[in-house]
Length: 83
Image (tube, rainbow, N blue to C red; front, side):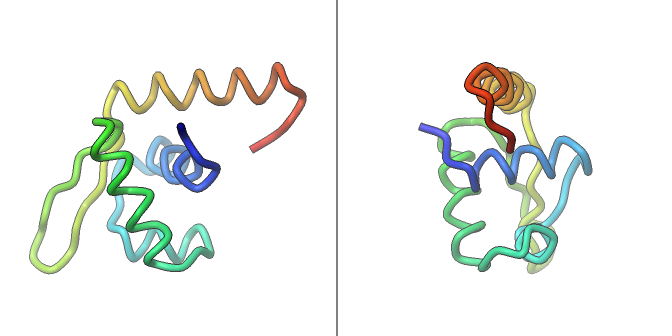
């Protein structure tokens, strides 16, 4: 199941292309551990890739992640809610 935080991470990554977990945390105004755990779950589901660059972990959305995000957004629209 995709959570609002996970969907938020996917949405930011779709807009930016890639970012590190710390920057995602700051941009989303959410605690680092929450974003880290969301990224871990997204990575486990193959919705993002994670590449280590120095001390940073760079996260990118995968094509599967884009499809899941679009499906999630369509579902929210059908339910009359916004992300």
